[in-house]
Image 1 (tube, rainbow, N blue to C red):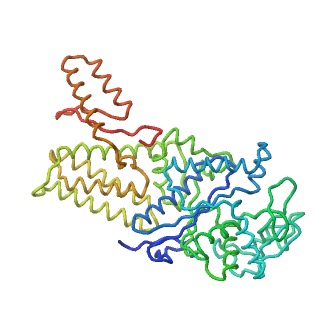
Image 2 (tube, helix red, strand yellow; image 1 turned 60 degrees about the vertical axis):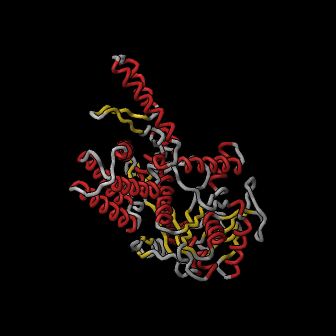
Image 3 (tube, helix red, strand yellow; image 1 turned 30 degrees about the horizontal axis):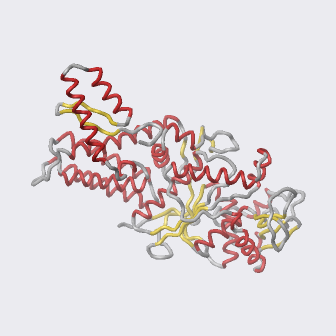
Length: 482
């Protein structure tokens, strides 16, 4: 396998990927603040990192993945007050909804989903260590990180601390010394959730949670930290400052960030109200169409959401499923070739090029957009080969199937096709109905023959009458991904 290169936001260049432990990748992705429904902008990030994780596993790595849940936060408290719920009740509702959405989108679950409210002790200990090392101080309303003490502040985002200081002011009631300092612990306000700490009752700041929880499960140094590009500053910049101040060394080896999902030239977000929920999209297009729509762009590039784009993704997915069905039907007349003709040599060469191109693209910073070109090159080549030969070569068809199986493993599309099914009885019943339909047509009882065809069609089985007889194919169902 050729070398893998990833774009590191920290160094602003592509670097050869070399994990800290041979054969293992430890990976942390910032999870959601669970106060509302998941929208396509969130899905863009989580599907992108799902594909990255799948590819790493596909090429032989064991991936230990952690994704946090922010289940206590200003937004949660504010929304809970608006809805008349307890913050815990609200967070539990949307946490469960997020997990259902991710499962429906075929995003593989993280190994650990730590929640802030279940890691208060670890967060307090982390803050205590920062205080001991001189990086944290207690103010009137909480504990703050002293940015002036961390000389490398801004190295991820490129932000200038002096310029930052000019653009931010200390609000009335805030107890921090400088505008750029950020909260590690917030002292309790009336009616808010709170926990005991050495600094009085209160709750964690936003940034400290990821440092404390990631280091608990992944150690004081790990391979990949990911999230949306909107998290580069201040969230990830602050994570780096507090983590490296605490540990005294480099914290994360590679920083990966996804581009924005755009609508009409603006970022999709809840605050702008221009979002579409995952639940709505799943009902209209299905998981695999959504996944194909997202991976058609490189994960770092902006992606514009349009209905035309979703329809194009659906049509592209149908093309792939149709190719797989064409191969399945062709296997019935395939044979072991004792010699190859021009058609076999050409198809073999196109498959070889497609496979080589697919892996070269994925090894170049997980370039799914480029890799997809080779997937459709193989699809077109397969269909072209099948029209050129009456008895295709079994070995070539198996090579094509194995390539598409690899694509399915990495991209999370066409998965249903490769799921082990109890197809023996299913195929016998379909062939039986085809036989009955043929008899009805001979008797000119076209109404009943058409009814069999329509009913099978509604079940996802498409009949095609060819000069060689009737063949059947599975077809993708809108709104289900198959």
